[in-house]
Length: 157
Image 1 (cartoon, rainbow, N blue to C red):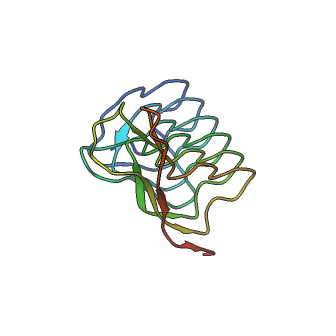
Image 2 (image 1 turned 90 degrees about the horizontal axis):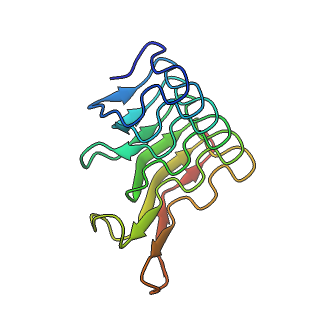
Image 3 (image 1 turned 180 degrees about the vertical axis):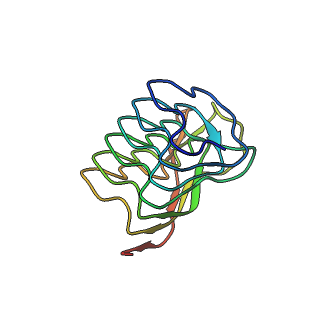
């Protein structure tokens, strides 16, 4: 776990593999947790420009985002880029482009673990200009065209 204000500073925990959560106001500077493997982000973590860019699911776990996390310009840009983010995103993804392309899926470059991009339920999240633009989007590399995208229920919370 990354907890209690850990991974503070640019690229502080670049590429780390975490078997649990990012919590306790951790990962709060530019690119501090870039390309980190984790199960979830919670407790006001991933705050700042691209703080948790390209968060990767931890060996098949699909990362949840909750409790005021992923806040700031592109804070969780491409989070879950193997094609899945969630089952839920609550009270998070706030700020311009904060979760832009979260759950994005590139067919052809990434192992075919999923058929398309998908994102779980959104509860009180995605507030800001283009906060969740392109979320859950899928794309074929071999000119076959776009894949279907799936976003769960969208609710105020």
